[in-house]
Length: 327
Ligand SMILES: [Zn+2]
Image (cartoon, rainbow, N blue to C red; front, top):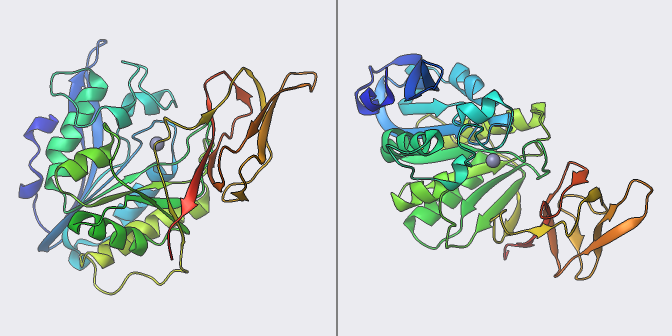
């Protein structure tokens, strides 16, 4: 089936389903296809959309989504669960962040273009067919192969109805860290498309490094189930979780402290460590051990991202600091 023929408002109730949806022709023949898992409750109710693999080297969500589908029974569900375990199918095929077909970052091209390149078409159809139908939207990311980020639920921190609903669901998700971003939302993200449509939403991060740690997969699995309890799609309250570390700050990872030159990167601080202005965060070395550059904090803050892979090239992102939310 081509995704243009998909009508998520007309799925048979009380069923679990899985299918592949055609997106765009491949030059060597056949189609690029998106995997879709659906669970429809006997009773109608809210629609939750959960996606993963927007970046092709982030595996925690890809691992969690089939488990979420396993756990949710149609007879216990009120509403509709729609999940795409791998969105950037071409980047997934090459274990890379961006698409090898058109070089694009799927998380920078939303809401996409119907007749655009492969990545733009994926963004377009995800927006048109899934995000538009959603009462809540979850995008499962992690730090990927080169990054390192603590396990967290992120949301746009705005004092309006959509902002309040996003924060409430992000709290219910139950990740150990909660990270809010004051608007404006940078363009091109799946969350920018959702918010543009008035759909409350959250995203996740986790350490990544090309693995899917069991504790992160469990966090994402429980988090999605918690949000379904929170939305009234499953009966009962979300599981009680310890109060999260609540952080607030710019989440734009395109504008972070970056490497001034090529070399071997050695971090000197841990994730979630509180650092002072001027504190040494990391160094870049040559193969003989000579220090070529020192990276110092430009302001006080909490380490929310550090590069995981040691080898760096000039311009690669190394650190990002954020602040604590007011109690
Ligand atoms: Zn990502």
